[in-house]
Length: 161
Image (cartoon, rainbow, N blue to C red; front, side):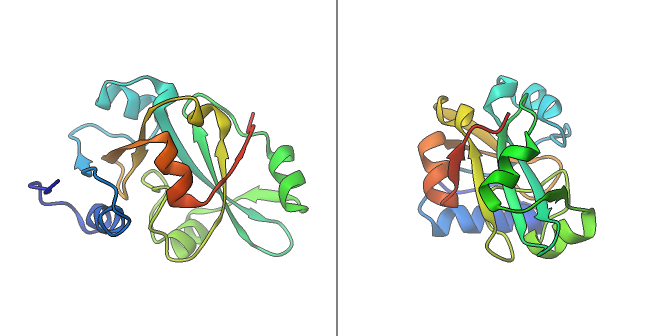
C-alpha cells in the first residue's frame, strides 16, 4: 500500500520498518492526540482494548530495557515482569526511553527501536484480531493483526495484569 500522506520523520521511520518487514499497513497521522490509550481509541474509532500500549521499563541493577506491549485498559503487574527477567524493574524516564527506542514517550511504537528490547506481549492483545499501535509521534498510529505483533517483536506472550 502506498502512503500518500507526508509523515513526520519519526512516523516515516516506523512506516519504513513496517515496509521492510513486509507488513501491509499505512501509518496515519491524526488531527487528535493518540498519546493515551483512551485518546487513541476515541481518535481512531476502535475499542480501548485494541490499543497497544508500549511501556518501557528498565531493570533496576543492570539497566536492561524492557518493553511491555499491553492492551489499552490493562495495568502492568510489575511483579510478573520482574519474575520473568529475574530482577526488579522500574519505569524508565523520558531520556532513557528516547535513548533506547529513538522515540519520545507518548508515541513509542512496538517496533523500529534504536536497540533490541526484551519484549513482553499482553495475552489479551492476542485474543483480538485488529490492533492499533503508536507510530512514533503522539498522533501517529498504524493498524496490524495480533498475529503480526508477535512475529514483528519476537515478544513473549504473558499475562500482564
